[in-house]
Amino acid sequence: MTTVLITGASAGLGAAFARAFAAKGCDLVLVARDEDRLTRLAERLGREFGAAAEVLPADLLDATGLAAVARRLADRARPVDVLVNNAGFGLPAPFPYNPVEDEERMLDLLVKVPLRLTHAALPGLRERRRGAVLNVSSVAGLLPTGTYGAAKAWITAFSESLRVDMEPYGVRVLAVVPGFTRTEFQERAGMDVSGLRDAVWLEPEAVVAKALKDLARRRPVSVTGRRYQAYALAVRHLPRGFVARRMARARRPPADPAARPHPAGGDAATAR
Image 1 (cartoon, rainbow, N blue to C red):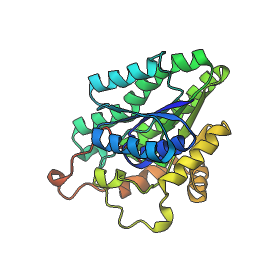
Image 2: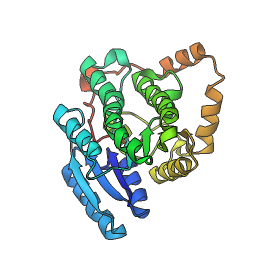
Image 3: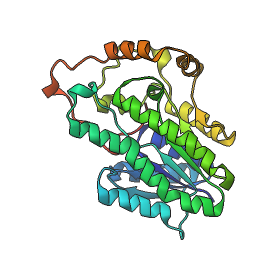
Image 4: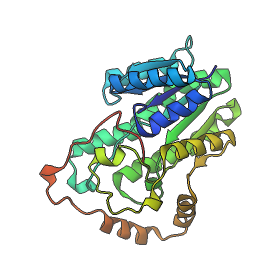
């Protein structure tokens, strides 16, 4: 029986991953800050699929919470076979207009946390010579799109490098690179996406289904939808300076920085 630990599991892509793995007969360890939402999700998955779902409430930006999840991943008596690093949040304004403390929190959750948790999981995966790590990145990481995009570029590069290092041990690593996905992510970040057309939006279930297919095919990166696949191919050939200027024009300073909503935190992480 495979056990899957998912961060940011209470909603969005995290909950979609939980449902997909439960449907495959996997046991689950669900991690997020909101214990009530995790408990309701665990009960629902138990009723629908008979899945055994362990609830592990933790704020991953808190040293104690992060250490608790790392210990669970390193527990040889209760091995975790698949780690899904999904937790994260975004900020509504460009870097110069955000409090540096918010930028540091976002960087910690998008970079430091998956690095720490992956490091905790790998010894057991190597020892058992099987398992997988799925890191949720973003198409924002394909272009110079601010500090969120920079962090997501890191997680994609980290995944591709780690995949090569772990291949001799039978451990698979996949970077999941979604575009705009219908979750709570944008609302929690205070982003105005009212001008986006319906055609650009992905459903969480579609992103997860594509990711699991690509994981089975041992692909390094999973991009959902022909639109975003074409986008990923095209950006490799665009001049970086030109793109950076275009992206900068799209990142407007907030009209009233004091009125900005505060970012949600550790379990807000879902779609990108």
